[in-house]
Structure formats: structure tokens, C-alpha cells
Image 1 (cartoon, rainbow, N blue to C red):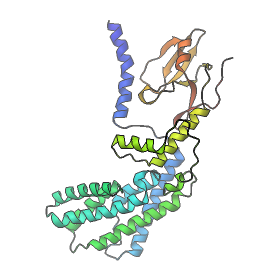
Image 2: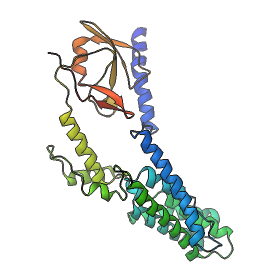
Image 3: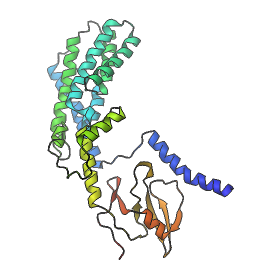
Image 4: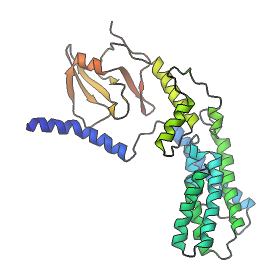
Length: 322
């Protein structure tokens, strides 16, 4: 009985660890180092040009003002240029609506704490119903309230000019910079309006995706077009990269069970005999080394995989056992 309990603990601990990572939202990025570097370079130059052009086009009293929310906006438009929250409509209208909400809260509520809370709440609600949800907008609304309470002779239109110059420079630079790279397009419509996807053999329609998103009843930072493109490309890849009915199990190679979500696993083969396979999980490092019958392992393994571009991918050519 004691040995059985220990075995259960060994089996469950990796599952608990994997569940914990999912719970806190940790997931390894599937982008390359070059993509990460490009995002950082874009944000660097975007903010720099904001400072330079603000000093040129804004009155001297406001030339040194750069909304701190622009830092958050630069993360979205340079690191997530295809995201729904990063598109020009969301950026422009999100900040402008939030500016108005901040000024309205300042005007009707004298207490700075209540006005700040109301400004952010109004901004979230107003952006949501206007279909321009942009998280940095909440920071803009808060900035307007705090600045209006501390500044003498606060003039709304002057700050609207600051907002327009800041976001105008960032968006314009994002359009130029992101389109320098063929896999990036900004706005995202430039990517998906002409994207060629394979014939749909699974009878999934645009309406099906819309229905699925409605059923979630939660905002997802991905457009319907992007979601459809991802799904179609994944289905096409699955169709052309199927493993054989009987694949060769080789030491120091990795195999997947073709599962989804928590049911997915990759195993590294350590040793193979005529009857047994010794392996360990490559996705749950805490799981101990295991042994099973060769036939059982072959039933479990659907295809061989390799770790490339920070992700597990199917090997293009699998060796079938004759």
C-alpha cells in the first residue's frame, strides 16, 4: 500500500507542476530570438522618435511631456503587431476615449482617489463598448486625472494634442518598421486579407469561429481572421506530416502522443531492447525514468518530434519500420 501511494505521488507531481504553470499563465514563447530582438529595437526607436517629434511640434510648455502609457502601447504594437488590442483603431480611440474619461472624472469628482478610480473604470467600459479596447488607455485616463489635480490651469485640448502627437508618431513608425519584415504586417489586415489557406476539409466556417468566441464570452486578443488562419495552417500541417503506423523507436530520439492540452506529452527514449523501452518525459522534467513494453510504447507514440525554434515540431521525415 505504501509503495502504491509513493507511486501515485510520483505520477501526480508532474501533473500538479504542469497544472500550476497553466494556472499562473506561464507558456514558453514560440517566437525566435530575432523576433524578440526586432520587437525591442522597434520599441526603442518608437519611443525615441516620440520624444524628438514632441519637442518639435508641441508648444514649449508641453514639449517634454510623454505619456508613460506610450511605453505599454509600444509593447503591444511592436511585440504583438497582429494582436487585436494593437491595431490602430484600438490605439487611437483607446487613448482618446480614455483622455475624455479622465477629464470627465476630474471635472465631476473633486476627490482625487475617487476620480482616479472612476476614470479608469469609465475608460475600460467606454473602450469596450466602442470596440477599441487598449490596456494602456487605462493608464492615460489615470494620468489625466493626476495631472489635472496637480497642474495649474489645466487645459484639456493641450493634452489632447500631446496624446495625438504621441500616438500618431508611434503608430506611424509601427507601420513603417513592422512592414520592413515580411512576416510582420501592421495593421494586421495587411497580413490576413490576402492570406492563402488550404481547402477546408473539416467543414469549419467563419461562423463557427464567431460562435466559439461568443460562447467564451471573454475578450481574446486575437482577431477572427488570425484565429482562422492559425487553425487552417495547423490542419494543413497535420495532414501533410502524419506519422507512420509503425515508426522506428531509436535511443536519444523524441516522440509525441499527438495529444492536446494537458493530455499532450513528449518522451525521450533512453534505451531500447527487443522487448522494452526506457524513457522519460521531455515536457515534465520532474517525472522519473520509466519503462514499458516496446509494443505499448509504439501504440502511444504517434510520430517523432524535434525541438526547434523553442517549440516541439514534427520531424518532416519519419523512418518507418519495414
